[in-house]
Image (cartoon, rainbow, N blue to C red; front, side, top):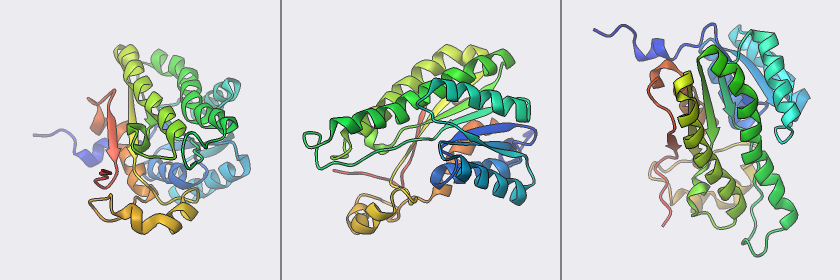
Length: 258
C-alpha cells in the first residue's frame, strides 16, 4: 500500500519557494501554483512594484506569506541579496525557480543587433548561474532543495530568428545536467523545464500576428497557458519528483517543427 498519494506529495506546506521573473506571466503563475499548494513565496523581479503587488495578491488569495524582492538576476550581488531576503523572511529557501528570461526575435542572426546579444545571454544564462550559485550553499548546508531552470524549445536550434536566445537556453540545459551531478549527494535536485509557445504579456503581440501558423506545429492544437508551465515546475520541485534530477521536461503540446 502507498504511504502517500501523489496529491499529498505535491504539498509545500511549511516550505518556501523563490521565483525569478515572478511578477507576471509564467513566473506569476508559478508563484500562484506554489502558494495554492501551501508554500510561502518570494516573488523576485527587476520590476519591484509589480513584484510586491503580485506578492500581496498571492498572500491574500492563498493565505501564505509572500514577499516581493527586487532582483536584477544579471547582478550577482542582487542574487545573493534575494536569497538572504528570502531566508530572513521564511527561514529557508526550499525551491528556486530560475524563470527570468528575455529574447528579442530578429529576421536572422546575420541581421541581429550585436548589442542585444548580451541581454539575452546575461538574463537567460548568467541569471540562472547567479541565482543558482547564490542559493546552493544554503541548500547543501541543509541537505535538501530543488532548483528548476528554464530552457525553451528554441534550445533545440529549430527556431530561426532566435539563435542567441536559443543558445542561452541550450546552455541552461547543459548547466542543469552538470550541476545536478555535483550536488546530488547533498540532497539537492536540479531540473529544467522547456516550454513551447505560451500566452504571456511578452508574447501577446507575436502570437496575435502568427498564431494560425504557429498552431500547425502543435499536436494538441493549442498554445500553452502559464498554468501549464507552472504545474510542471511545481511537480519537479515536489516530493512526487523525488527521484528526478538532471532532466529536461518538455511542456509543449506536442510541438514538432519540420
